[in-house]
Structure formats: C-alpha cells, structure tokens
Length: 318
Image 1 (tube, helix red, strand yellow):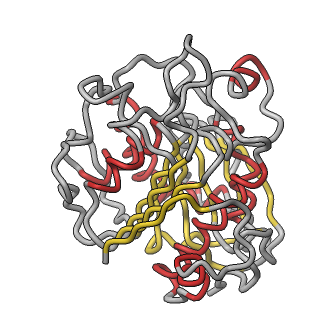
Image 2: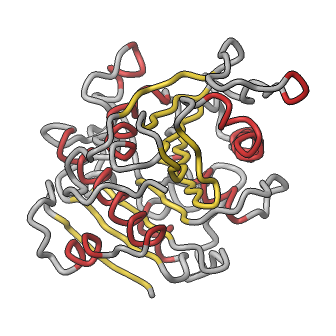
C-alpha cells in the first residue's frame, strides 16, 4: 500500500498527479466484464489522482455555494500529490437556499464510489475506501456535516473515516440558517461516533467586503459554531488575514470565477491560504489515517517552519 509523502505538507508532495473529469460520457480506464459494466457517476466528478501504482485513501470535497468544482483544482492536486485520490462532484449549477438535493446527491455519489470509482481510475491506481474522508467548503462544509450526521433522510453505507469543514457556513446568520439547519447551538451536540474532525476558518470571513454584501462566513453560522458543536477528537485552526474564498484557484474563470474576487473580503493573494488548507488537510489525514501525527503536532505547538500563514486561533478537543 502506498503511503503519503514525508515531505512538508504545505508544499507539493512526491506523487505525480493527474486531473480527470468523469461524467456520463466517460469511459472506464480499466477492463470491465460485460456483466459488471460500471454505471456513470450520479454527478459530474473532477478527480485528482496519483498516477503511480498504489492504493490510496479517498477524499471527497464538496464545493461552496454557486461555485464550480474546477475552482478547487490546485487545492485538489496539492492534497493528491501527498498520496490521496481527491474527488469533487459538481452538485448543481443553480441552487436555492434548500440543501436537501445536495445532501441526497452526496449520499448517492458515496454509494456509487464502492462499485464505480475503481473502473474509471488509471489501471495501476486502486482506491482504498476503508479510508474515506468527507470534506466540504462553505455550504459544501454544511452538506458534509449533514450527510455525516445521518438525520435528514439521506445517508450512505460507506463509512466516513474523518470529516473536514473548510470554512463551513450554515446560512446568513443565527436564525437565518439554510434548510435543513445543521447547527443546533448546543455545545458538543454533533454525535458522530468519535469520527475525527478538522474545522478550518478564515480570519476575514466574518468581515463584509462592503456595505452592499453580507460577510461570506457570518458570525453565528460559521466555523466557530461548527467547532463548538463538535465532539472529540476535533481540531480548529483559523488563518489570520485571509478570506472565505482564498483557498480557490488563482485563476477562476467566468462570471462566477470573477465574482469570487469581488463578493468576499480577501487576503492579498490566494496561494498562502490554499497551501495552508492543503497542508492542514494532509497533516490531519496523516495523523488519523496513517498514525503519523508528526506534522500536526508541530503545527499545534507552533514550531512548524513551513506554515504559510499566521494562525490566528487554535483549539483542540481530544
């Protein structure tokens, strides 16, 4: 079995990677017997995968509100280069406030992975779904928690090994949660059977860019409240001077891509925050999937020289 790279988690890892797009027109990369023809995925998927022979854990990344999965390609390739298969579904093109369709689609994709994913990867690459990570950014973070909590009518039989919220958001403010609400405002109320959790926050997410737009990660429904409701083990890091969309690609095209630079208060550039998020994810997964907590402990203790941003806050529940 391949293990993740021992390199600095905030830099690219040792694995060469490739980006694949899977949809209804995709063909299997592996020979599939006619009696076991693999169906296309329920939604279009962007997949970052190592190309070297091996067996790799699988990370699903759910995109934020009205964003495209392709906006996360640099982050996905960063994580994948450390020995992970990263999958980002395009959950919708247009969506209203209700997230039930996203919850349903995520559960359906998770169920598809067990029989379908292997057939679409390079022949020498094997997904290890006994190490499955569910993660999401912004509204996608809320969706990831909703699926893990299994209380909204849709869930998957695929076991979640770890759960990650990247600046998760549950609405526009306390009392203004998008349905179905995930946050309960009861401390430690997320009963997830000791699934290790990582919550990453942005220091500028609570600040509005201008009076015309609300904050992109409003107080009362953002990473702070998600972490308050976690049970251990749970980790919480907040990056100072970076915004809610600063982990996206440098060049996000189209109207939505350009608006991602206008709607939220941003840092000076995206690369440091993207490297921070990627490195935290890698360090966290090394610790909880491989039992190697060396880098995560160094980050916690403030002695990791490679951290690309100033950490504004840190908390842990064990």
